[in-house]
Length: 204
Image (cartoon, rainbow, N blue to C red; front, side):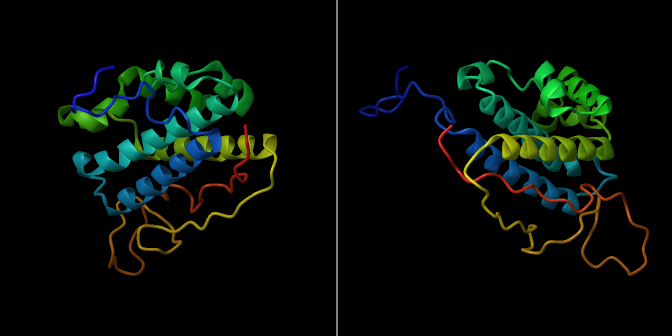
């Protein structure tokens, strides 16, 4: 591959090729938390307002599944060839995803929701329901984390998780600062759950 900058060689390695599964899991957790912050700041009634949150949520799902595949021995080159495909028989067989979750992963892949959230404002209303997206994200996060935790050695490391305001707080769809006490609550996007503790880094 030829470099666009004179005197600077172009690496043949793609970004992330040298990351281990636990590092990919860490990145997925970061996008999970970003989606929490963005969901809390978005306006549910305005479709485009939720696009950044959706993108982070879908990307987090993809990264969790990629971490699982890397842990199962799939080469980075093969994962790149998947092109945002969220469907694989191993996800159901080994992670034991619920049928609704597996079907939702298929639907998001078929509708190319990842690309809609990034590039297609005119299709913003074609997305999955927010509650369905939240449920899928939560289940994938929990089951991938537990799978890597239960099949990796080296103990555990504690990750301090906070929201975008540095507080561990419940997240609700469209929640705005300063809402009146006793106001109707929207569905909790992640049921107040946070990424599971992951095993400490160890050679894989």
